[in-house]
Length: 337
Image (cartoon, rainbow, N blue to C red):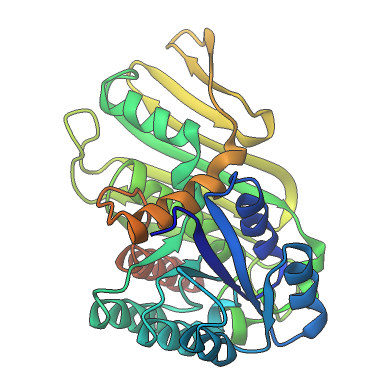
């Protein structure tokens, strides 16, 4: 078996570039074998730049795989979330492992259908691309918190927000296609981070703001509560506060607040975790860049498929469905006002 893991990218939009960049920088561990997109210009742009084959549809790719004209070890699905069921279903039926971009689908119902499909094709590996699980600072903060670095954890705080005016006219803010706005887009990452760092949660309250008439929300403020303890330093009932935004000042931070101090990481000030004691004295701890997260995620995907690795750190389709349920709950609470 070759150590190179051949990847097909399904959907050649913006997020595909992050995965292709990770493939290109993998020093031969990963290779781009195929690009699927119905728009010829989009697929050929990526395919020709990386000596890959282009396909107009997933069906064409699968036909080529069966004919032996292209070798694919796994597919990264980067289509819009509303288009995932048919694409992922056909890949799993063909025995092709899937790493789906987040959110798993545009609503809870379709996310559950995809989780069911994953169980049905249990021998074919599936995962959801919640890439922040592979941010070195996230992993280090989680471990330090579990070990008691900040005492008993009382709060998880997360800002993922910036100004994205172009989303106003794209499918991202179309209620019928996207299933939600800033919260399903950025906030689903936040929900998964809470699940990954702290544990299962319940949505307690939510407030949404709509800057763009007749479009999805552009800001979300959501309160979570952990459903069970995660070791002695992360008790049940721990609070999580999530801020998601598409039309505000850029902030990308994750913090864990405890009875003996706080750990925080700013994606825009990459390379350090800040520990503050109760007097506010800061200590900087060097950490590897967040830029490795897409590469580490794809390498974990390759290891799961080729080496049958068990502890990959990847989010499962069940995790994706759980995050979707949380997003749906927040939207319902926000609608009640």
